[in-house]
Image 1 (cartoon, rainbow, N blue to C red):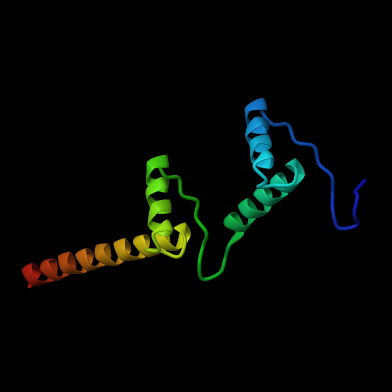
Image 2: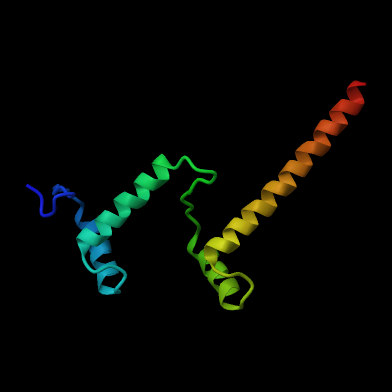
Length: 113
């Protein structure tokens, strides 16, 4: 039985540690309740796994000190937000690596001629 015509009720078992972490997020006001947290987590994960558009969302884990550094950069107005900073940093890093690859390919082409 479902509460709403377009919803289904399921039961999930979680470790006590996970429940404590979720409860902490609820206490901080980040979520109204555990159901909201679980719905959002599942939707986010499904979007990540099934994304087919021109961009794909990726999950990134960073050491706490790096996150704090990014937060400081944002706080000082050097980036719009953390995601924007990371996107820009990754884009710049990829461009540099592509340039390095192109230089290596050019060197190989010259030495093979």
